[in-house]
Image (cartoon, rainbow, N blue to C red):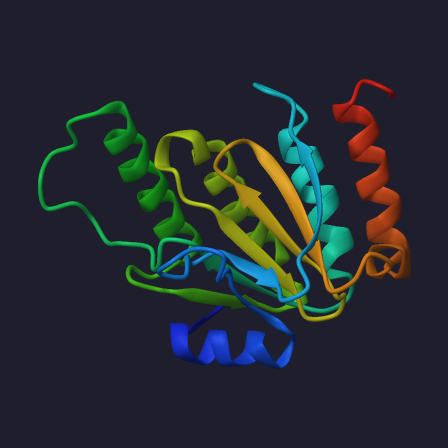
Length: 189
């Protein structure tokens, strides 16, 4: 795993036609392809399939390449200086501790994982997905190989952003797995 400054990360994303969402003032730390083609699927609430769904989508998204991971509200903070006061604070502290165990340094803004480190990228994504409704930070995983990014939304949704409507169909394995999970979420499987 390699940490990347926010400036270097955003410059790399601009080369891939990905940038911060400018529909809001000031611009949010939400990453999207500039064309904003979105495909969304909620994950089943309290689902025991969340880990499987996330693993499946990450494997297909990344393919044989690596990926970047970006946390919407900036870097992962270090340990709290004051005791947690709410359930969200406690969960946030636990997630930060576990992220540290995976190797995420405090203050990191963006992370790069090569293909051999995908198990670590999965752990980071799963910890953020499981705690999303409490910690309220969205996470973005950008593939180095496929023209797609996976947005893990704090409202218990996976959102896939692609540079065009047809781009998802061009990523055969990702398209197949995305379609499968959409059908599971919608109760067709």
